[in-house]
Length: 404
Image (cartoon, rainbow, N blue to C red):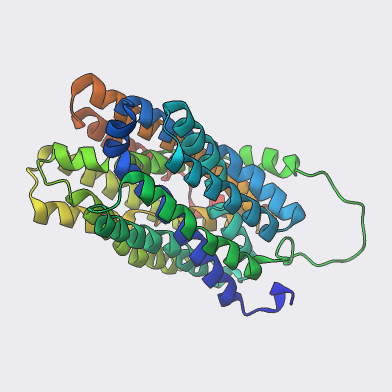
């Protein structure tokens, strides 16, 4: 059966599951960094660099995977990405060398995550909904990543006492088979929203003209800057959450608990962001989100933390966590339409992952240099304020459609 005949909410459900597995695995494995460091005798900064390269490669693969999905079909790209992702998880679990772990974690997992992540599935969802419902649908889909983060973080917290990091990698890798099952619902989605008026010769594999036109748009450039900061924040707090918890003088189990709370709170946050984005100006909602993030990160530095306060921080940060995704992708669709949404949002995601690379790597470098996350948190807070400012010039008039 052609999946274009399915109720579009089934597509949302499949995309929800894919992002749940994708983000749940990726965002929780960073909690195992101290254990991996001890077991394989790899310095924290070197492991952080590996996680940074994983983020960078994920971002580089995303737009290419998006373009290939638009040309060859979403399901094929998702299936290939899931296989590579699983191979990387199993290799990382079985290796006993630092080079082997780097290749598996940074390269294979990076490619696998990039080919099964937001731009590919959000491009499908965006094409199946009208403009007045699109951002809400994108928000519900994005909530899959948040719920996955909650589920995997809770699972990690429950199994950490009797499973070592290698066994956790094996268990999480096996769970990626759910992505393969969900691919059935994503078949034959590329280009469905576009009317077929006549048979033409296949165009070039990559629509570089659409990409070039997009990068000449000032609002698109500013969205890339904002999403760079989003990636920095996400990587800083996921890869280094155990260290941040220790910096605040809290017990180690707070790390997985807090990451679970963030994921659960963001289920509400992304759906609310999608609902709000269909009613109010999306870039100014993004301005508010980034400003609040900056204030929260500043509070970690200057407010003495106890468990209750840190959980409060986690809840509020959770509401803001991935709420940028439906608003940013919805803004891209509002400007350029949905035909090339997977590839155009893919390049925005690449900017996100460049930020994630620096958030992961610099967090480790700053910790090794100063023995504390003090300056890393201050830098993250300052970038949050910067991201808020860059969305101010994206006025409603600037979002008048100009199809790529």
